[in-house]
Structures are given as structure tokens and as C-alpha cells.
Amino acid sequence: MKISVIGAGYVGLVTASCLAELGHSIDLIEIDQEKAEMILAGISPINEPGLDDLLSKHISHNLRVITNYNEVHKSKLSFVCVGTPQMIDGNTDLSMIKAVSKSLGTALSMHDQDHVVIVKSTVPPGTTEGLISSIILGYTGDTENKIKFAMNPEFLREGQAITDFMNPDRIIIGCTEQYVGDTVASVYSGLNAPVMRTAPTVAEMIKYASNALLAMKISFSNEIGNICKRLDIDVYDVMRGVGMDHRISPHFLNAGVGFGGSCFPKDIMSLIKVAESLGENPVLLKSVIKVNEQQPLRMVEMLEKRAGPLAGKVVAVLGLAFKNDTDDVRDSRALPVIKELLRRGALVRAYDPLAIPNMSKIIPDIEYCESTAEALKDADVCLIMTEWPEFGELDCEFDLMRGKIIIEGRKILKCGRAEGICW
Ligand code: UGA
Image 1 (cartoon, rainbow, N blue to C red):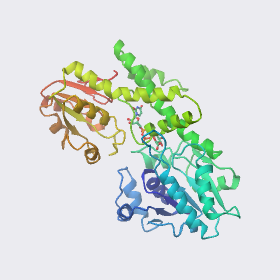
Image 2: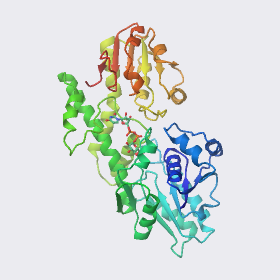
Image 3: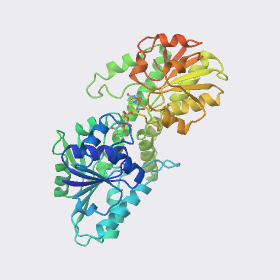
Image 4: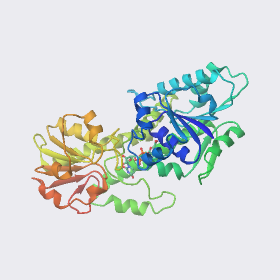
């Protein structure tokens, strides 16, 4: 099938590459010329296992990267995959969605083709059938009812995005007409996954509710962990037992310094704002955020309690990415921890296998090291912030430190020399 994918960010690039792998003919539309050229040269702008291989396999064959909408009408479908970041007040910034709708509407208005616009971006309920369709149909007029809309959320995780795309737990298709849903479903016919058909608003809400529930499991585990810590109980043992209940599942019960990334914090804030705009006070969702904001500060407080005032102390921070296997530092828990350490006058020395270039753009004035050994040498204390497998093996490297205090925000160390934030 000839398909356009709009936006070469995380979701767009993975969607385009995987759809090409499924045998479709893809036009990836990216208006940033520099980014488009980079992808065309086979260089992925994001660090995602397996993505470079897919790009080099399909670029110039069945995956084109273009910078305009001139030929979008030749595609049967277009997937909208642009970012919906959080604004300062917590609401969702839909400016990129509006810009894409305008470009799509203008391009489609010049031709007379059937076309399905499929929204993959995470958007507040009502956006597909409201904002997006009204902008596009405002341009096309669409007197013959040729342009249709669907919402098809994406559930991929960074670091495992290709595997998640190819092996989804479910495919959610929100649309109002049976044959439109059939067309969208046929895109995924090469995948073995249950398909749920529903309304676009339901599909939009499924994405928010899924992320909110996963984040809630983490904040719940963290709160139980904080109580367990006081009682000298290992929360990981507790959650192992809790997760054996099939109604709960063992996943997303890892307590620690909290969740980060480009999705959970922003999506929960967005849902809170949607709820408030409707006159609701979503106390549970607000608590999920509150627990998450408290965990990094607890870690610094625990450190100060053990090591004394932090002013002038050298703190080795191991891990900057919001999780392992990515260079993404968006909303990483290392950010509030480093900021708080600096506020208390500590000297921060940081190491991460991938995320130093991204973190140094946000916090340029700390010392970045090329190895764990360099970060640990003569450090007074050490904080472990990201679950990188290579940190799990650390042991004698800690002998390089001047002090002996090591605190883990993620349970990863095998040597048993660290104290956990909530275990
Ligand atoms: C998340 C969801 O898992 C995806 O299903 C969803 O598609 C995506 O958001 C999105 O909305 O686009 P992602 O942000 O890549 O994916 O990362 P996760 O693997 O879910 O981890 C999020 C954060 O939670 C990380 O900081 C991780 O360290 C933390 N976490 C995860 C915990 O603290 N404990 C856990 O048990 C699991």
C-alpha cells in the first residue's frame, strides 16, 4: 500500500521504517531539511536498536524521505506522527498538529482522491474528529466525503521500539466507518495481534489511560517502597509476590527514583488538564505526579543524611538517560537530582554510556566523564540514576572513591555495596 508518514520523530521514524519492512511503499514527510537529509544518508537522528538496519535496507527502495506534501494525495493513507509536547501550564501544545492539518488540507484540496488521515500522535480526546478533521475539511470542502479520519495510537517503548511495533499487544483502531477501519487494519495484516475497533475518542482515551495506569503502578510501587524502607523490608520481594496475582501482573512494579521520558509525565499532565477543563479534580492522577516529583528529592535527602552537608562534596552521578538503552534525557530523574545537588553546592561528575551529549545541552556546567572509573575517582559519594546493565557489574571500581556511600535510584547493582532509595 502507498502510505505517507508525517513527521520523522520517534514514532514517525519507527512507523515509517517498520511499515516499509512490512512491504508497504512509504513516503516519510519531514519538513526539517537537515533531518531529512540525515535520514536519507542512512543516519538515524535517534538512537534505537535495529533502526539503522531498517533504514539502510529500505531507503531508496520502498522508503522515500521528502520535505513537502506535493504527492501526499497519491498515498491511500497518511499517518500523522508529529509531537504533542507539554506547554508550561501543563496543557498539550497542538501547534504541530494544526500545522500538519493545514498542510494536509491544502495538499488534498488540489486533488480528488480518497484518503484516510490516521492520527498516531497522542492527542486529547476529541482532537481527531474535532480540530484535525475540521481544519482539513475546511481546506478541502470535501463535498464528496472522500476524506476519512481514524485514530490509531502507538504503544512503543523507546529502546525497544522496533520490537514493540512488530509485536504489539493490541492494535487499536478508532474510526466511525467499517470500511475505513478495514483499510487501516489491512496495513497491519503482517502482524499477529488482536485488533480492537472503536470510536476515535475512545482510541485517544485508551492511549492516555494506558500511560496513566502504567505510571500509577510505578508511583504506587514507589510509595509502598518508601513505607517498606522504613520497615526494613525489600519492596522488590514484596512486589514479586504482589505481581504473581494475574490481575496485577509483574510488570511496571519496579520501585525507584520514578518515571521520566517524553510520554508519562506529559500525558498524565495533559489528562489532568483535560479533566480539570471538564470540572473534575483528578486526585489520583495528581498524586501519581506528586510521588514522582518527590522521589528524586528523597534521594538527595537520603544522601545528605548519610554524607552530611553536600556543599563542596564530589558526587559521582552514574546514568543520565531517563532509562537504559536510550540517549533520551527528557524528564530524566537525573535532571531534578543534579539540579538539587548543584543547589546544595555539590560538585557533580556525571557519566552515561549514551546520554552525555543530550544532557550537556541542558546542564552544561558540570563535569562529564568518559567512563565510570573517571567519574568515581576520588568522589565522596555516588548516585546511580539509570538502569544501564554495565552499572550492574560495578564492584571494585567503587574502591576508586574517596568515600564509601553509594545510593541506587534503580535496583541494578549486583555487588550489594549500595543502599537503595526504597529498599
Ligand atoms: C512509555 C510506554 O511504556 C509506552 O507504552 C508508550 O507508547 C510510550 O510511553 C509513549 O507514550 O509513547 P517509554 O516512555 O519509552 O514508553 O518508557 P517506559 O519503558 O515505559 O519507561 C518510562 C519510565 O518509567 C522510565 O523512566 C523507567 O525507568 C520508569 N519505570 C518503568 C520505572 O520506574 N519502574 C518500572 O517498573 C518501569
